[in-house]
Length: 289
Image 1 (cartoon, rainbow, N blue to C red):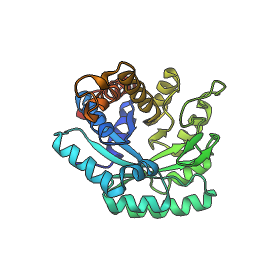
Image 2 (image 1 turned 90 degrees about the vertical axis):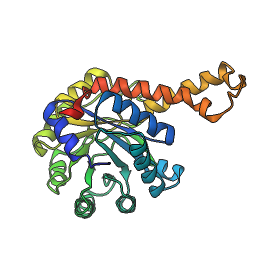
Image 3 (image 1 turned 180 degrees about the vertical axis):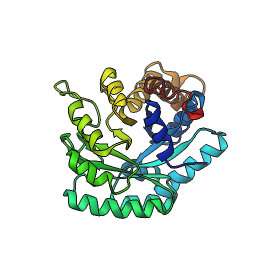
Image 4 (image 1 turned 120 degrees about the vertical axis):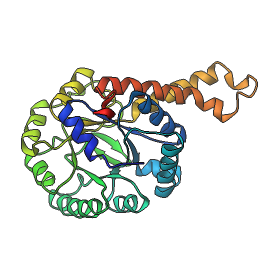
């Protein structure tokens, strides 16, 4: 049974570890992440961007696929199905489709409009026992056509949004989506401390988890970041494993052209990456806590 993400992230905040949000892009992705997290006995958040949603067929298709895999694979860990960087209309569609957690990303609006729309989404979602993530300050890079240079979130604005009753908050602290450039300045921990002081014990979210040095991620978790988003790293290892399969001409051996065989190396690579990240975030066996 799918759950909202509030309880798992509150536990992570209190326990000083992180919960991974691993974005899904197809059935193999979803199955690999669920199996890896079940083995590690950790709660997990399956993130879906609206672009990935469109690619997979739509909100209802994704929701039913995740519900079906969760049941048929006998998954016993807490699993949240989360809309990642949702638009105003997308958030409403996710609620209708049965998502158990949503992110409404109003960071590109003026703060007054962000507050107004976030407040409405919080009311709609909480009426359905769905958790809500909001965002203040743009996350660098590009996400479904929304481009940001990674502004630092204003702590006062973070408090304004936190006071709306959101369950966790994404706040820009210099992090970006995708591969980090060589001249990246790193996370701004001074701003993170200011945000934490402003919002209290509200779990914070680190978007763009791929490529941030490990010591910086650990430092962020110690300072109230409870949810770390991973997507690019899984895409990279999946592509590398698939490329190797063809370079070794495995597709020409027996029925090596069978898509189930073609996709298996990438599937296993994602599982390995997810296990690695769960260990790194300190989440192994956290489902029992």
